[in-house]
Image 1 (cartoon, rainbow, N blue to C red):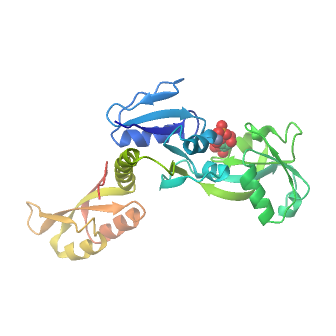
Image 2 (image 1 turned 90 degrees about the horizontal axis):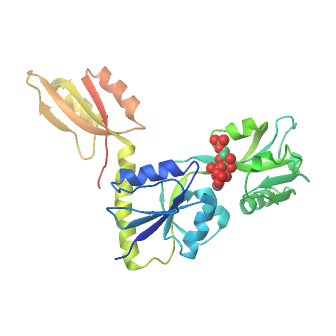
Image 3 (image 1 turned 60 degrees about the vertical axis):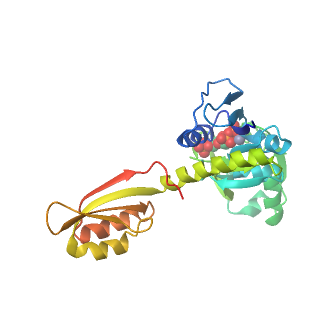
Length: 285
Ligand code: PRP
Ligand code: ZN
């Protein structure tokens, strides 16, 4: 029986949300620090804990079958990998930053300068596109200290909260790309592994859909039901049940989180009462 090998980041921004997503899919495992691999107990999956920068390469080489990694790493490494799902978490941007005291007015100020980065491929493409000639210094870690130690004039690195830049007295001046975590897969998985991946995707999508929606319950006067149904379409249409009190009904539906506050305001104006909102664990098809 085949087992799908999933590469996840062993330490860093992607690690915790990646494992939380797999747990939310109902997959049990035990991940202890220092471990390189761990099996799942109730799903044909094995974890490989790796540096995020190495994940595209391992998936491409077939050491792992699939990986959870930032889109930035997939683009930088340039292997022909499939992106099978956008996972949406670990949002960050790849940006150029300069020392806070640098009087930066525009890209032309980078002309002839040196820039340290772990993303030489993306940076090179960007500079060419912007017709800026700068010298790229590829370094694999601690890029943020390069200007302070006199190695380069600027850096190009991932920015998430911005605290790394702040701590190193750097300021962000250009954004090159926005990135979030993706599920990436090798192009040539066996039929058996593809079937496992499809099962995993059904679960991931159910969890992702659920995270974007809320279950809403409310009481409303019967005279307003038609208006409320119009703003609360739900998955198919809302459930309506009569309350013990005459002239009132209870209505249950599902709302997208983006519309949530807007809808709640309208419900209030329509006389809805006892509005309860709960998270949803999974939404299947
Ligand atoms: C990135 C980047 C910074 C940090 C920025 O590292 O290299 O160190 O995140 O985050 P902040 O804006 O919230 O301070 P990454 O997570 O890719 O780890 P790695 O460089 O060790 O692979
Ligand atoms: Zn990294």
